[in-house]
Image (cartoon, rainbow, N blue to C red; front, side, top):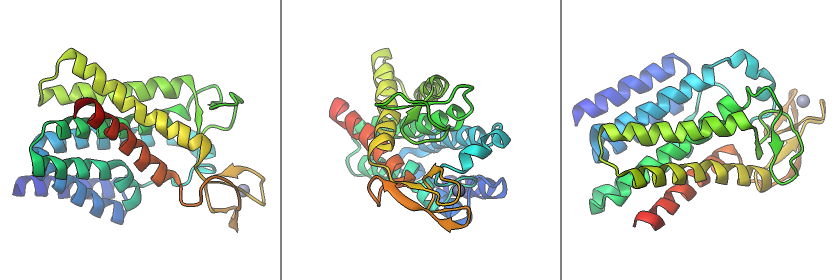
Length: 256
Ligand SMILES: [Zn+2]
């Protein structure tokens, strides 16, 4: 058990030094990793590690080509505590459920929560690099890359690969029938679908009074932005959390 705690601390420290995590993000990574590791053992940490390492690489991949996106999305650069909780918080709940009941459904739910988070992150980190501008859900109009609720073909394909990687990676530790594997993959993907739907509907958006751009940021060009639409409490972290929650809940209903 001490080894799990030590490895988690080391990874969080590494993430902090490599600027993938802020100080608060590193602290929350230790909490998340420890709880998940204590409940699911090395399998839990391993899966979290696949998500964490591939997502950090995806963020850093061609980061100079994502400068325009930095103007639109709410948070850029190192992940803070709320971002870690948005993606790993549901995993903590699954870990507690498994600890209390020993029901394998919580193990499946954990795999889905990580698959959903990975699919989301890969979809947005790679999707913004698409040569074609993404289309907004419902209207199908082309919008600026990074706009929540918009999808590109490349981003969609990458989010499918992200979820698939997690489900296949879990085979190293757990036995899955092919039907279960495919189910977990599809359920993981519902996470990024919910993310896009919420992004297109209820996520808050603002407009910059200086450059006129739509953005998720409360301050743009050093000036407070004006509210355009969406629920005030529903920022990017809340949308991510609800998407992972939604997918995990579907898993509970299917396998429970
Ligand atoms: Zn501006």
